Image 1 (cartoon, rainbow, N blue to C red):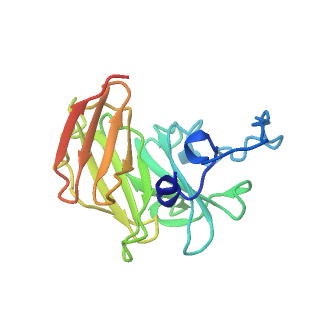
Image 2 (cartoon, rainbow, N blue to C red):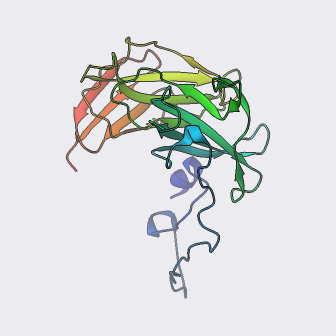
Length: 224
């Protein structure tokens, strides 16, 4: 138990694994209720289309204290030049969200958008996973995304990107030089316990793939 709490000091739900001893205590589970102000964000810009397709991650940025969320817009009807793009919204409290005006992707009329990454002629593409890695002082934000390239390909590969501010992203392995992980489009990623590797998993393919700092992939099947 002490080892568990030392590795994960913040616990959302305490179960018996993290409790060393309980005397004259009774566990009470309360029914959660939805916040009456839902939804906290609704799309409204032309490039956002009809709704949020994928959510890549939600973080409180330790550098500026802002809540930040990355999400995907896909084939917005009013913006035919956009196929698959990743957008960013920010919040002071996690409840009231707004679109920042960024310089990454502008509309044909020069209007700024909140798009941080436009994949252009992308083929099949999965949801991005955003990770914050504070030990990287220069570029603490990391993104993993699985996609097919060129657009007519059916083979998914994984790609890593890094960013200093979560807005301007740099491809670590440019297309088509991705990691062939043998999985499909329902992929997500998380950091390994040694902090030097990242693991991606796929529900549809029932596989787990691990990539280290060299971005070489090791894949194994995982029954679910």
